[in-house]
Length: 266
Figure 1 (cartoon, rainbow, N blue to C red):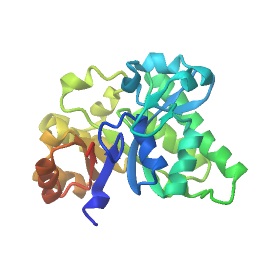
Figure 2: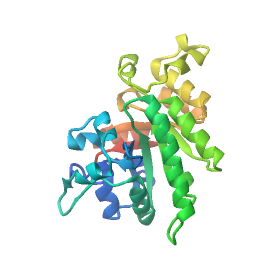
Figure 3: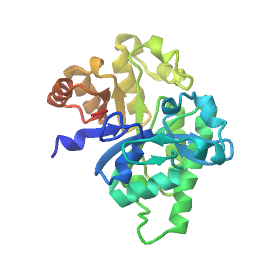
Figure 4: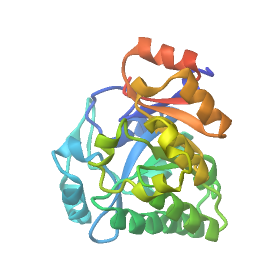
């Protein structure tokens, strides 16, 4: 059971069933932890949607309104539905006692910063509306906010703290500098704040950046995770996660190394 708790389901407990962002896993009341992507639509609604399920890019999703979102349909083994709004997804997650790894996704860092504000306001609105089953501590106890951008993670935490919410954050760290250059919201300025950056590997640099910004976790691609990297991260009081893994042998190797959690498509 302890090992199962390390797994975060990426696109659902059952692989390749076609439902966006683990919606089917929640609807079918699977317990556990689920990864999901949040987007701000042009009308101010927040959607949970995996854009590649619909052959869309980030800008395409941002140009949708509620009617456009509802027109998108995916069919799984036994149902058809549209991607949900964030408030609908949260309600389902609360009912199923499911934890969320919530990635803030946008086509630019500026839009991700706006999305951070909208998301916290959505949680606060749900607190105000209440309801018999709503847990006002859900955002603190069951949600991990994730991004490639240190600025975005700092912004969402700042807004949450201003509203007496102490949230958890996780930094996605690209495999190498070449990949980082392709990420629109990667926060390059943070690298210059690390005093001995020239003596650190790229992955070690990520741990220093995360720790310096009081981020709770850092996620690496599985092929760069070593015992030494884990020791460094844990010494900095960081949890370490692995990007999606489907191979069960590799999962066991990562568990034996001591990773704190694994995103998985299994």
